[in-house]
Length: 430
Image (cartoon, rainbow, N blue to C red; front, side, top):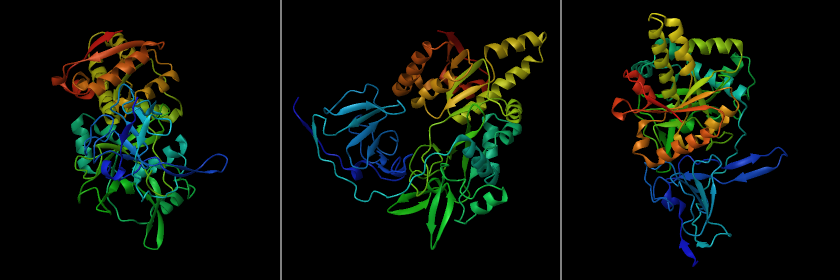
């Protein structure tokens, strides 16, 4: 094979805002390890799939130009003779233009790579404690409450699920006081994504959500939100109902990125990178009982979908159906059959690409029936269809009854919309 020449200029491919994954880490042996930053290819086009621009938001280039992660890549085939490896999350492929590749690369290095110190991810218990404080001190604004009610939740859900609203605030040293008032260590924030240290004037303050509330434009940090706007905070809970991550959503967000994104501080000093989490959604009343018992979720049947908020709305609709059944003659048998066949638990990943997270949590559970309910756009979106099929094939070899939900997209894009609009999906047992 003759050598190909591929020139990569990081600054031509990316706007280079919100770098991911890099910085200095201290390993378990106390050794300082430097890791590369990754930048979203949102300026030029990905050299693997050819997609680009601000609406790509999937593919990434390494800070030295020597590697590209293409999340649109479904085949993992080498294009230029480069080495190709599955990504850690198995949601795309890493194309490495290194010495072992049959390729000559002329990377143009970005000279202003930030030097920041990253902290290891805090454990689930610590994140739960800190995130509950965050949601307490950033309560839901009325506009976000109205939007949640319009989606199909009720006030009990909205309050019980602890949704919050992130609003732009002046940089004040509020968190030290908050931790002290709650009898918590002053450094409990360390390793919790979203928290980091920021220098404001002659002070170094602990901040939350700074990189979510601002973005880089023309070399300056500008506000992501317009005056009076907020970003809805959607908590993600594990199977012990600990809040282990928070996603943000804003219809009026003016920064770079998608409508939904994780609270993270991977680009900030003493910040932490987010881990992809799944959300366990169940009825508000049942959630409260489980939290009081300090136990893990145990259920026979679960639905699998994409989107934390979507899973919460879908659960509310399932509860509404179960409530209607209680009003029917011989309701006890009918309700028992409904709960046995369909359950009241929905598990969600943040996006179709990270479907392997489903497998991880199901292997640790006692679940016997799984209903796959991905959005109806899998019929027109090749990437979503591929990820859905990968999930189905992985579930086939597990010791579960596998059921696939399907429906007409005109009745609702997601399972939450479908149920809220009064429809029920067709269900096929594979």
